[in-house]
Image (cartoon, rainbow, N blue to C red; front, side, top):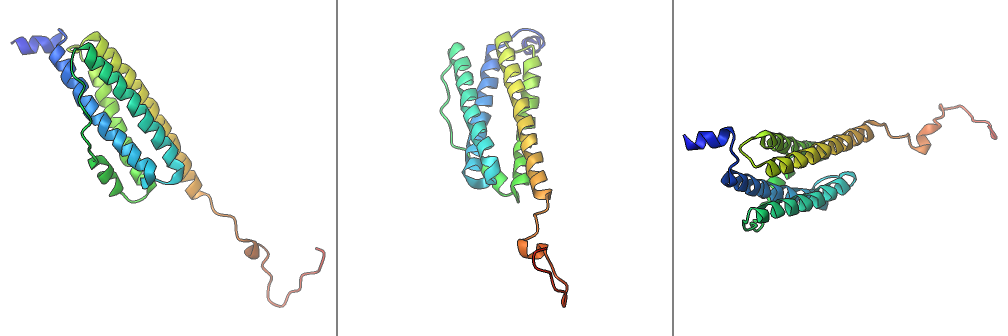
Amino acid sequence: MEESSQRVGRPSLARDITAVKRNMSFRYAYMRLYQAAARGLVERDAQPLMREFADEEREVLARLSIALRQMRQPVPVEQPDDSLARKMSARRGTINRLRFIRQGLVTALDWYFRHAEDQSHHPDVRVLFKELGDAQLQRVRRLDDLVKKLKREKAEPEPPAAEEEEKEEPGEETPIGQ
């Protein structure tokens, strides 16, 4: 009975701690994924965005660490987890790898917004998750823009080589000066 009343309306410190620590674990894994992508698992045109995402993850981790300290909790140490990078590298081509990243971003976005609305979290934790969700939404949009750009670039036909531009029919002479 006590547990159900906590879920309905009263914030639970234990639930806040669990949610923040769980989120940190995922954020560490995604930071490693973005770092791996920036080191060459995606085309050069996508690497700067992956570096930006890795930097942004560091900032998110700092905010989550502050939240844990405010709850008087120790900050967990990063546990190296390259499983996401391995899963991404199994995809063929940059576009498919970026789609894999996008799916993770969307899953996290949904998680943030669900937790931002969850009344069993302290209002400060809900605000934090709402802000992180908003930032995640911007990340999805930036990634979508990059994918569109890469697709456009791949779809544009390459200009013909110089020797193919002026094909002459056999037996035809081209007047000099024209």
